[in-house]
Length: 397
Image (cartoon, rainbow, N blue to C red):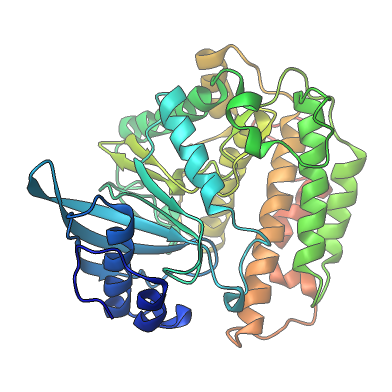
């Protein structure tokens, strides 16, 4: 192996460093592999060094994350950089989604930064080859901030529940503004061409209605993939049938949708967003895709708090407040919100179903007698289908 860090690594160098599986878990192996990869993308003489490599414990279902510090020579001096690599999961990890296009995420983030005020981390490189780390990945800057936690859910007690009502409202309004700014990006079909549905002829203009129908078809395909080798969920299939039979006539053009529009994917400082993360579900569609997801994903955590006998945050991210703020910021009145919150709950159910399929595959959970029990919010989704879930909180039948 070539020990000169200023020279470019060879294929043999990468192959000798570690097998791909080891490269994902061993910090020392990762340090060597990242150093050699950086030497291949930086200017000659950069002499990169990599330190403080960390692989977060909660890793592997979606994009894998590697945190690391690196130093190299630039502009005549040594400069330090705090970085994050987002790595596609290995097939052996039973991934959450059937396809991970890391280069597409990289390009979406670059375009969002270029064409909107939405704060996204600076993305530095996209590596399509799996040679360096065992999978495609991209590297972005690492920022500090507060994230509403998923485990335990932020509604169970967190810096957000302990904040003043005024600060929570500031965070809520700023989060809705993120959606308003994303949806305002002009010419999204041209700027985010890679997100255009592949089953629609390029000669057909992509309006909101066409994009929504394509998105729903894709969710059906996602469920069939998730259930291909295991149990099937009658509840999910009932919800898919209901959604497909009641697609609203969405008006207007398709916009850029974040896709995973929830506060748990935002870094905050002083209750203001400083980084919007996790773009693997980005798509083109109606605005309500993001609005329904933001509203329901909070409600999901709120329901968990209620089940645990905790006060939660019942007045936070309510449908009435979110849609009113969005209307004030954009002039757009949300349409068909009952449908879109049901669709959000259905999409989340398919994700949760896949998560449990993964847990069963790894022996972390037994397979239940009823497949619908693999959906943590089974009762909520069933109530939505029965039209008994939302009365009194702002979503009208």
